[in-house]
Image (spheres, rainbow, N blue to C red):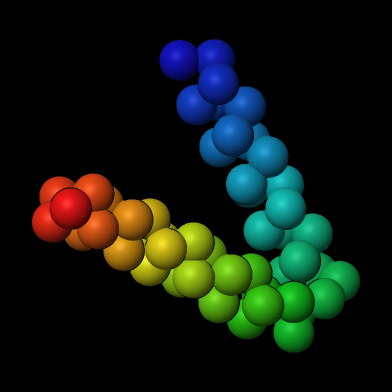
Length: 50
């Protein structure tokens, strides 16, 4: 549970910093997150089919 809390705190801090200082980095972060999620889904599908 503590890991979850720290991650949530880190995410909130990172998001607020990005919003204030570097708005264009928000898109980079969103794209990177989407790529990670797609990679995980692809890995799950490969494992299930293989």
